[in-house]
Length: 527
Image (cartoon, rainbow, N blue to C red):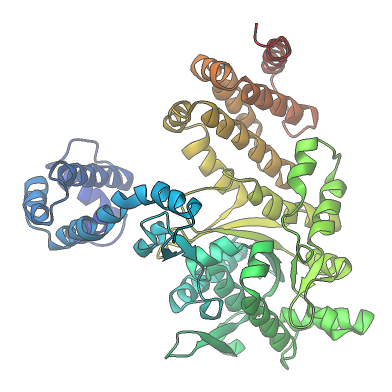
């Protein structure tokens, strides 16, 4: 935020030229290169760090903000003072109360009352979720999507359609989207808003309660594109926490399917008409929301990958369909509908998953490859071709981006997975840090098995940094040799399955030797 205010307070146009100009100007305040827009961002971040460190030294006293800004920047900048003032009065005091976590746990164990607080993500502007350690409550399901998330959802839909148009020259006939309850709680419904926008609908809110009272259909002429069919794979938590939203989306799909519009302007109706002609059941033909069996959770792929008990896409798709082939909506309530799910999945041209926070990424948890990668694998199995796999990035709501899954994987790989600073941070966490490194390799492998997104050079880099680098190898041998063995075994499995298509034979020999050595040490009790 301070970076934005600093940039907005200096002269120039809002483009790359302005940023380069800023970089040159900023060298009067802080040392560093000034040849590109990226350099300008780096210089601004150095200034922001000086401001934050200066406020820390001054105990985050509100009165210190204005003098410090003048000292660091050489002139007054009221917007930066306002941001530091907000940090002093709101953010820092709330962060200081994170010790409430232990106190409230002990109070709960003693039968005492734990104060309530809202859920959400501080990185999405929800500072009121701090301090942590409270008994958090969810959002009002009837207030999803919010007005702000509607703006973000529209931008996500527009970005996805624009990217597909640029990549293929056509509109996607059907989009598959993975929707989680935790994301809905953090964003107040970005994913839901995107689905409505793709369908060509908009929410209607009650002004008094801010609740969603229904939806209205946007005319095709105003929409400016065809209505995109959307197939949704919901998580078990979303099913349980947001039944009202499931009903809203189902109503929207069914309403759009009954519009008197030509097939080329309304893919939802075109597909529903095709399926109705085949089996005569309009309700089945408009089922677009699928999830786990009532009372069940997950996508089922993690146990399969961990057990190494699979051979092809058919095995992955079978598990994904068995776990997710239940239809939800008005009057459906988790009805077994594997056939209808597969019919909808055969039409998917884009398999999408949105990322709304910088607090975790695609290879930080197994759910990403299970839900999103599983969708890609199932479509590939059903059609013989992989759909376009996209990741919508709304972590900065006013800078929505749609990347391919490959682009996002490469970005995360370079920014975190093999980032020396991240690996150093994991080494500070001992056993758990080594476990996180091993889990990251597992999740990358899972995404590669389902969606084919890990290149050979990435496997080589993982071998070099996680297994062969003396500092990391010694750390894991001492802190968690099982993690090092697991990483080595997973890399060898990638080569055996052909995911690592052309591994260097010397690299494989070193991996085998390391694995056998670890196996001997562990079986011998580490003697």
